[in-house]
Image 1 (spheres, helix red, strand yellow):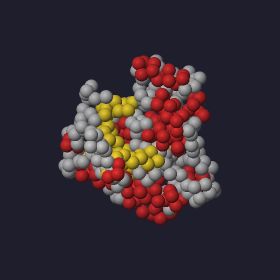
Image 2 (image 1 turned 30 degrees about the vertical axis):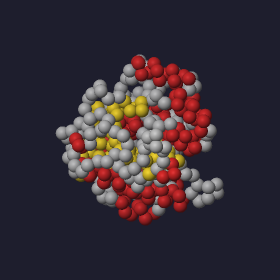
Image 3 (image 1 turned 120 degrees about the vertical axis):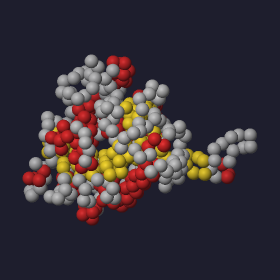
Image 4 (image 1 turned 180 degrees about the vertical axis):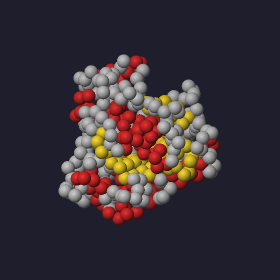
Length: 430
């Protein structure tokens, strides 16, 4: 057995010794002095094999860019996708963390350069069924591949999940293409592409400046990008041709008539959770939303009156504070289900994949790990999301086995929040 199993949920699968033997060495090298080692990004636990592919529908900044996770045909011909696909993302993470670019590039290349996620890149789509769709929005300083565990977990249960990469300068890094200027044209004896990559990095407010105008503008762009991804996928579902600015051999034709257009949800983490709420208020095609440890700062009051769909808030124990929770409580309703739970022992970084890829010491220093086993925390995140989606998308599955989690019932969850709220809000949070 590669990891100590004390406290592990019964649904958590054992990891293969070959995978653990490699990842445990990395954990030790990264300063893990705990007997509990990591075994990589967890695979999906549903009945479907999972594939993924990247789509940039327009080479410009106005196009849609996302990684799609989907049920795929089981085949050994396709390799698992590289978790961080380009080294430029290391640069973006360095800037986001305010660390030296060269140092971060060396460290990340060594420890994470060969890490793969358990999804087969460009594997054929599994046709013949109608799959519900989830649009997923990443957090501030992240990008489209850093929530593979959540997206793969949902896709393995029969969802199509589009993890959007935002180009509002809130991602640590992203890119688009532009036509190469004539002055930069290649010599006659050389070959060169007509397009060149343009990389964008995380934009931070100037010291002392009001942060709200930047974040408010960004959340508008982010919501637009979620809706653009939805429109594009529904066009693909209708059989319209796809133009991909990225080199890819993925066949999009089997997706025709494979998305259940009446069962669409939106989800996100942190700034992405606020984005999901914003998108929910903009488009009734989203039947519900799941907000993971939401950072509500960018939302104005008027958004709350425009949302009429169910919302589930899944919070960590260590990230939230009074004003942020009170903004979530503004969405309480007696007409539609609005639920909030808190995962005991979790931190804000219990939701992205880094929590699985660092040893105990580094995980604690950078607050990538909480007191809870990260695999148990991810089980809860995925299972409560599945239960909520079944309830509000009208799915005929067995996800209702996790309904108690929605009410905060379980060893590792509590209903509402662990934050002490002002008088008048206390009872509603219990």
